[in-house]
Amino acid sequence: MNFIKNISTAGNTDLEMIALYKQTKDMRVLSDLYQRYMELVYGVCLKYFKDSERSKDAVMSIFEALVEKLKLHEVNNFKSWLHTLTRNYCLMQLRTPRNLKTTEFNPDYMHLEETVHLNGVLEKEEQFVKLEKCMQTLSEEQKKTVELFYLQQKCYDEIAEITG
Image (cartoon, rainbow, N blue to C red; front, side):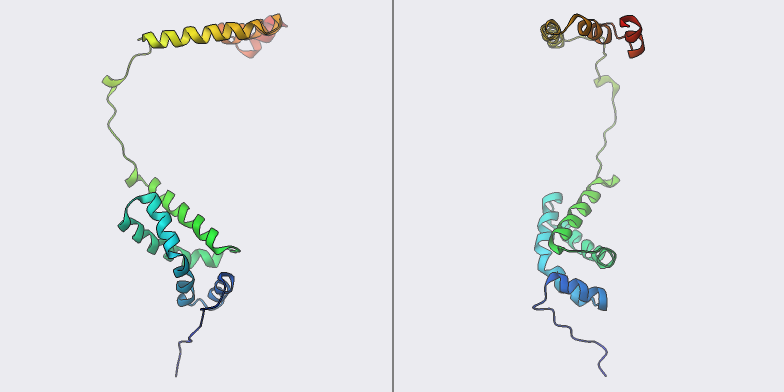
């Protein structure tokens, strides 16, 4: 008695293999399909992780995820869908807390807002010169509104009350 069917997938398209996998749940069909794109998956992982061993592990993890995800999703272009799945997997791995690098905050390294540097003063002066040139192109009503909002820091209601 032979319980294991030998399913030939050599000449099948990706869509045919996906349909066959969904129908039979045969891991060999999925494995044959995945092997077509395993180098692509490895390359994408290597691009993100920049570590060959971690990329190899990711290739295996993505295959494991593929077993379930392929049953749930309707895939029309397997190669691009797999690329997206791989990219998302890598990004999620990079976002996990063990990959976040944190440093202790030392307030001694911060500057006070009151401390004014010379280049900051020069930048503000340049901005005021530019603002003045722009203000000259506005009508009197617009000038008054801009002056009230940006220079006198009035809110919209106050400006509306003042200007009518």
